[in-house]
Image (cartoon, rainbow over all chains, first blue to last red; front, side):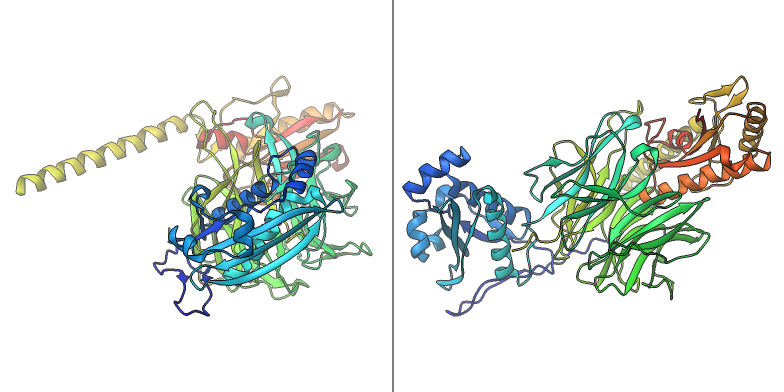
Length: 446
Length: 160
């Protein structure tokens, strides 16, 4: 079990007047950056109107709470307690008294205001470098009031990006399988929620078994496996319209679907007569292409972000291992050579890594390796866990974990967890019911 | 100093002894109903007709039929030849110790190895359909080798 743990201090700041704070996210973060998130200021007029619309006392404070929670959960920031704040939100937003914020050890400060203009939510916010006494970022945008939680996520993404130099992953959603009932008769439904667990919606009723939903990287489409009418087939679902259709007319089970990076194809396995091979289907012209043709089980395919390669798992060397091939099926190469079985390879959106599940000596691991199979790192070990899915910036993995039952077969549960690529910041992602098979969406468009 | 060393060693020996007995006793539980790691007991089995068990069991990650499985399937074939208007569904399953997608493929392969065997005993392919549930429908919710062995199965179910 090798956790990559590094002892470097990750917050780099210099005491030059022009120097701006930076957060290094490539290493495990031992001392998260102290940041103050001032409640967004709301004028009295807007306050009354907002209370009517949202039935919330202070939407400015609610939004700043979203930002605070996001930053905290990232593991890179330490949001400071608000009762220590000396400056009022509206005044701080105009010009922070930097020495006051320094006094409570804040290194960065987020201020802002929110108002209702022509029935629209208008938000502006600023990010300040307390030590340098400088504004680092100022942005304003307008949206429909119903999007108020997204406002918090968008602000977090901008702050994260300004301080780490990489895009955020907060204005995103997770699609997963919600589970209920005894282990032998699980009821499973497709569920979608914001990345922080809010705005939960069920997309199926639980009448049929559904598994492995995956987001399109380009739009609000989802592909998944459904046992509708006891015919396990890959389906396509438009989560805006609710329209769903079966993908392709295969005379057997289709499963393990994923989108190509341009969203135009679905790659999946098709099982017939005891053999599973990998196929793609073009969603525009419905042309089906066979990619592998081998008597072994070939499944869990995933495209590289440039669409030129495919990684998948196969038992062609007798046990489940990870392979990479060109997207036309040529040049198949095994890349996993460590001890144990390897499955569910998923190509990082940054292109340089493949995340996987490993089974060795009765334990399950989530790990990453380079695309040529070198540099294997195991991030977390457990009784059962599998199916990692990348955050859109390639810095965090979400996966699911199942518990061991007791001697009477009781105590089963399934839950979503996330962990940073560094091996740090492992945390349970709260869901209303038991949950499995998470898939992370792209940024929703900020 | 020496005394402490001796004490330490004694404790280590006792600990080792405890670990060994623990291993021995867990193994014993299984042996009655497991051959290798294939289930040989009768729990969870239902009968298509008197003396015709509905299911066969597999070793971990395996899809080959054991001698006992082939005997069960021959009984099923004899029964199905008599009931010539009966169709069946073969439901292939895996245990919980594998990734979901691979297990779907494995279940499909297990059901098909049962199907192939029934066909060699004269049951026409168009009377048999196959479905894999992977690890989605365990019969035993335990998290131990015996429970897992009961779940690695292909079950023959009457379709009409």
